[in-house]
Length: 280
Image 1 (cartoon, rainbow, N blue to C red):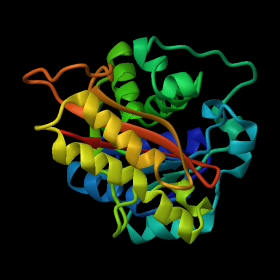
Image 2: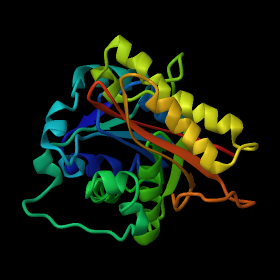
Image 3: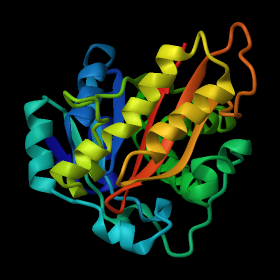
Image 4: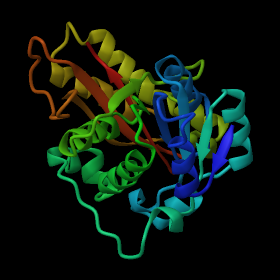
């Protein structure tokens, strides 16, 4: 695996005559890699010739400086995982390499910037799109792989690709869960063993909604799911909603031909967890 820390080194390698005609897949990450991240690489293997994984803890998408500070950075472990997965390139830049002082950025994300995660984390998606656009411009990938777990983020990236008219195929990779159903997340490392068991209430509420989606009213489903979460000791619910998948506008009725997703965010042991499930 080739490891690059500067944009110049990465661009020179990708534009060399040996690599120029090859199909490139980009897997952007913030490190603290787990099986979920590795599944993105496995998903990309049959789709591309060169797999580029980036590790960059992006400061512009953190609302809370303490959250940025606490974010895990086990880089040696990450490198071993990527090598074992036969990743071709790791791009690992510094903040100074990716940003200039007082840099400005804004992309029109419509309602996606103002609802759910957008409402609870103002400016977060502008920060996400800012770094992803930089990576897209730098790597010039043919495809970009993102995990379904950050569902709203994927819809935001899709919107940015449309707004910027980028010729990039967005690939959404399924959520990877542990044997009990907990969605894998770098933040899970901050949970105790008991906390991980408590956090199963999130996937339990989602599974309940999916299994009853065809035969219960939406409002009843939402109330039942909230009850599952609020009755679980140690879970502090932030929101639970059922939405149309593309716009993420809250569903009031089921329309034929549309797809729906349930989104949940809750706190367990001071850790903010998100999860989702496609319902139909």
